[in-house]
Image (cartoon, rainbow, N blue to C red):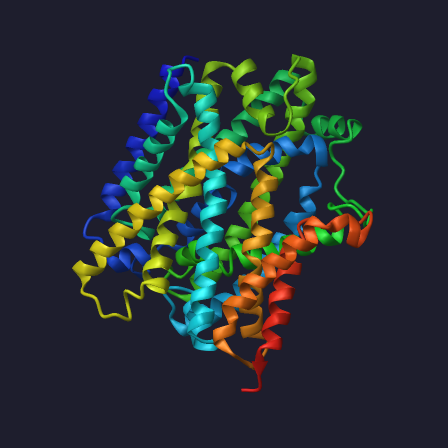
Length: 479
């Protein structure tokens, strides 16, 4: 398929997003942008959040990792399920009871203003790094497969895509994203299912036969029992649990969509539906990875990791399936940035600039919100260009590593607030929140000296949260 045809497909898809944005952002105000006027349909939010949660990293990296890890990602998925249950029945009732717009307002009410600003600042750093890393992965694939052959430079591709995202999130915010995420999740899942079906047909295998072949090739292994391995079962399970607890339950982007639902009961149904659908889709992504690794040797494909799925599609699938792949890919691209950009604008405006407590008028608040939105778009551009320069081999590993460093302080702050009744010396909280990631970096850098053959993996997030929690205990006193 020609690069021009694929370019036209991307343009048509974006035009559809703009139509949806135009329809949903009419008569939108600041409440529409921040919390969707508290009128979002819980089923739409749940289905749309599947695409936001997975993003382009899942679409490319999870199938690519099967050759190295087998179905070991299931260990993390089990932890995800437990984490979503905890968010549903512990954190959501808290946020609805306090009627929060920004979830970090809880930290101010419970611990103090410096704690509140520290939590919001770490969210902003976390989401900027992780969302821009996800965005880079998909932009880079679009660049390599379409735009390089057209002579378009990478920086211009990134500018145009971010301008597209800016256009359809600028006014409607959450109110628009609930609908665009639903459209994008549909495209991603269709691309996944159809590509898997073609691979089965190409190898003349049924679903059960393919699983048997994967088992023969060692692709279906799940449990890692070696304690020293970063993929050890209990480490992966606990890491999955705390990743969801931090990256969903303590993350303004995902909670902003949840609390846009009118009632707590509907929001809880949204989370439970999300858990079920996301689990099924992630398992299907691993199954697709197994099919790709079965197919690659028969077709002479030598690529692996993040490069495997695009290599099979572009080198061996018919033009129609290349179109479907790119629909899925760009469906994965936009949720990785649009919701993040909206949530970052909301958090910075509310938590750092204090637009609500300053008593700003609707027009002044909207004008300031627009400026913040544009500023974050520029920061996204700078970070994507940095990731292009670094060019990490596996973006899923990089994203999870960043998560461990930046979400740990949020985990420690919220855990201290919920699990204890002690008061903190609020002025010292930023120091403690920064000390956690710094200590984690020192420990991570000196693993071999400190632990010998043991290797810290995804549990870095837990260690970070524990260090921050311990530091808060040190600077705390009885209420």
